[in-house]
Image 1 (cartoon, rainbow, N blue to C red):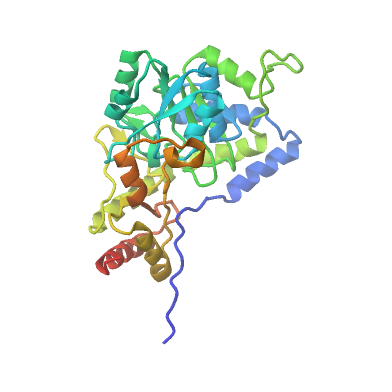
Image 2: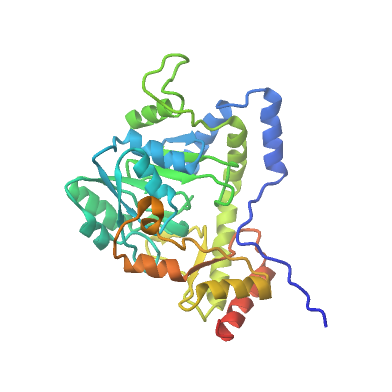
Length: 366
């Protein structure tokens, strides 16, 4: 008997439709393709929708948002910035790119975010800032981290690359520190095709960011500082504006999907949500204590369920940041974390398949 291969359910799937195509065509018809009115409108709308009106500055990637945020905040050589090691390397890369030193702290086990006690233990006289990552769409404990920063005279810069619309204590992520960075990469909860957004608390920093992204000039040929060419184009902003209008409904679908998965999955550890948090489920990440990679292979080969392993090598163990540290929760998460499909394209039938597949593979002892 020939075995039927199930239709694959991808781990992630960007949603680009006719609305986005029409928006790009409209910009192309104007002939104004570089940074222009679409970028300005996107910044205003992003601030109003996701940041309680706090100003934002559009750039060409989430990594650039982190990099320029650090530069504009005055972080540089001789400074240390405390970051998690269980994250994408861009978090630490941005710190290194401004000439500062990333210092790695451990995560707490429930939400994969910075552990405040580990951050406290990593403080030195050179510590200038702490950069929490709101990983997988769940906010870090901004109450405890903000208090620790205030007590020690530290800046807070948020890596909110995966957390568009998430809140802590009713306050949007990206509005707690001196700057917050969002990614608009295709697999994020919303996209501009490629791009990033920086939220800022200070008008002076906002102006500096606008200079830094545009060769150091506000007026053409009037270069005030040494800057970069890291602008967002109007083509990308047009996509982002359309996606922003759809984000709320997509987020509700993610939360619904996450609730369905958590209701049905009993064989592995499912995500928890802190009382103070609004989780936007960029990823739905479970823990598989034994042979996570074999578990993932079985889901894909036998059931057509795509998965993601974020992040199999902690940043402090990468060749670029080799550090002899003992971060037990980081190491455990790197061994156990497995993300299941939760994007808005996942149907109710897909959710049932995912639950059945997870329980089947777990029952088989993989």
